[in-house]
Image (cartoon, rainbow, N blue to C red; front, side, top):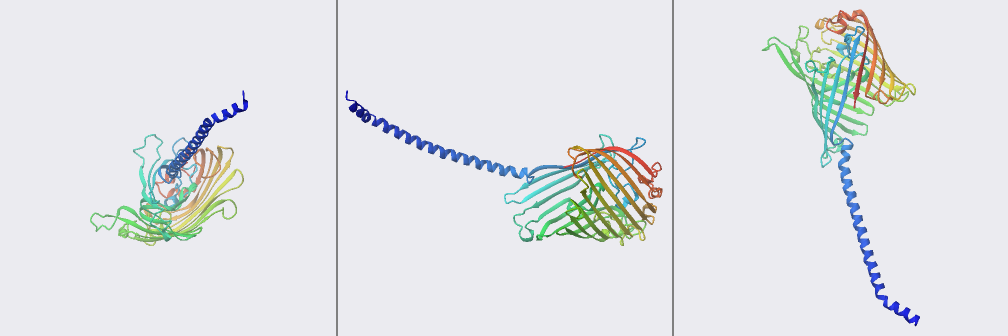
Length: 478
């Protein structure tokens, strides 16, 4: 057998199968490339769909769109040494009638809650809308059903627009609002005193964050507050009247400095009869100069705020702007406030506060109200979930009422000290909530303060010049 010829014949005969194999490999390669292109296209489609889904979810995750819920609530028992409910509250003293708070830790006998519902949307052009509804309730009853003595109320209901697509220039970052609300920036308080430095709320409209430069912005608002029926000129039809206090406000920021100026007018309020005479104010002015510090008075970590407030006429209620219609036409008040928070060490925190006010001709010509409160809260962190909290308050007052609403003149002081073992999910700051506390409080005051008003707590016959109180309380916000 010719091996060479046989081998050559095999090669010739195998040429066709080899050609077909090569062609098959080529077709397969083209199919593979086509499959890869198709797979690549599918991946890109899936990535595009995923990005679109993320774009839809992201505003919800950031809280820019959809429903959300916020709350503040407290609830607790305040008992005296006989096991009975005890009078209490941050405004327990005679000075409390004109805004002189004495502190809240171990001094609150109520259940109070705020339920805040928010709905946010973002338009196709990027404009954001925010609707807020705030419902609040308060009671001093310890029962589970308190509809008969509760105070359910709608405190806020408003709409705010921001990132408006058509706003440019100094209004590019501005937001507008209308409805019933607390002013966004005039609602800052000393929480442990339960006292606002300044507060503005009512029904109206406004614009926030008008930006003149990187460090200069302004807010402008127009509020109305209603004064209920009041005794007025008897020559009117029924001897009663009512009016609205209209408040125009400009709140200006220059870096950390805040300057507020407000003017107000309440038509016919000068017909109000206060203490038998018609001398109530129908106009007023209010101003505040404040500084918001980024450290604890420049000495260490923390923060502080300090404010000087002054008002005349209807503006003489310097804390709750425009809320008091009984103010005398010559009323004048000045208030100072300062507070802050800082650490004294790895496990100790301190939050001191001071507030003082003086006013003349407040309700009656010749009256004079003066008071000063010093308060501090101290916390010692003893574990991941436990700390000891302490609070001390001292208030001195000199109130010359000229017989307004039958009140007596008083001159004296009040002091209180509270110790409160406190549990929380995580220690670490005065603003960490929720908290569960038990507490014991000792209060003492000059007997003279009992003569201010027989209807208030210190005027009660069985409420002497000092007392021990005990209780428990929860507090939460988010």
